[in-house]
Length: 102
Image (cartoon, rainbow, N blue to C red; front, side, top):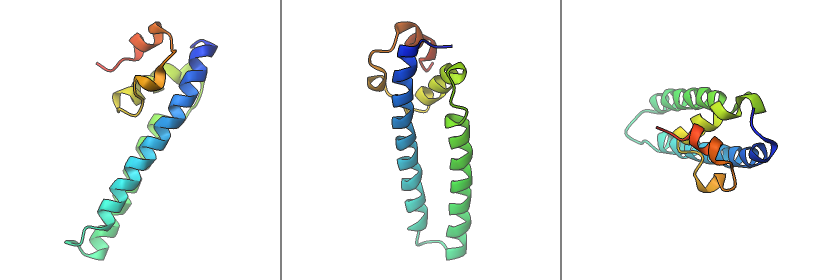
């Protein structure tokens, strides 16, 4: 479990990461909708799969918000590029080192 001070920083960083994730997903959805070289049905099916995959990623990355799972989530979010080092200013070196993407 992480310290209270690290937890507070993580909660804010996680909210920022969620906003980034959603912005990226929406951009992907918009691109799929605008594909004019496909039929409406093909675009619909493609969009459906995009939404389904984004929802699975969202669940994996953001669900189960607890201090006991924070290190795993932080590692995943950093690996996905959804949390930057700048988002984690003030966090303990121990947490930063243990969650740094390899």
